[in-house]
Length: 168
Image (cartoon, rainbow, N blue to C red):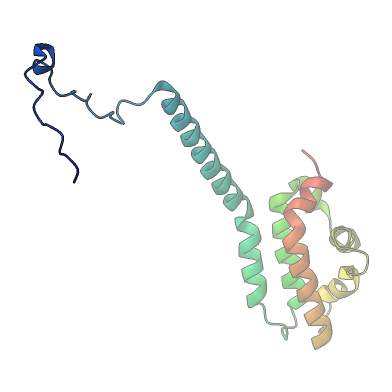
C-alpha cells in the first residue's frame, strides 16, 4: 500500500514548521482596459457610424428611383395615355438625377434619344414607343408591355448612367 504523505512537517526542521501556504494574487480584472482596446473600440465605432451614414445616404439617393419603379408597376398598360405617363415619370426621375437645365430643355426626339442612349443598342426603342404620346392613337398590348419593360430597365440604371453622362 502507498504511504500517505504527512500533512505536518516533521519536527526535525524548525524552518519548515514556520512555512505557510502560497497566497495567490487576485484574479485579473477586465477593467480597466488597456489603452489599445480603447483605440480599437473607437475605430469600430467610427466604422459603424460611417457605414450607417453611407447606407442612409444611398437610401435617400435611390428613394426617387424606388418610388418611380413602384409607380411604374401601378400604371395601367391599357390606358391611352400610357406613353405620356411613362414619359412624364422618366422625365421626373431624370430631373432628379441629372442637371435640371439640360434635362428640362429636352423634348421630342432629343428626349427619346437621351432615353435610348442609356439602354443597350438592342433594347433601344423609346423613340418609336413614345412617339404616340401626343396622338390619339393607343399602343398595342405588345407595344405597351415593351414600353413598360424598357422604362423599368431605364429606371434601374438611371442614377448611375445620368451621373456618368452629366458629371458635376
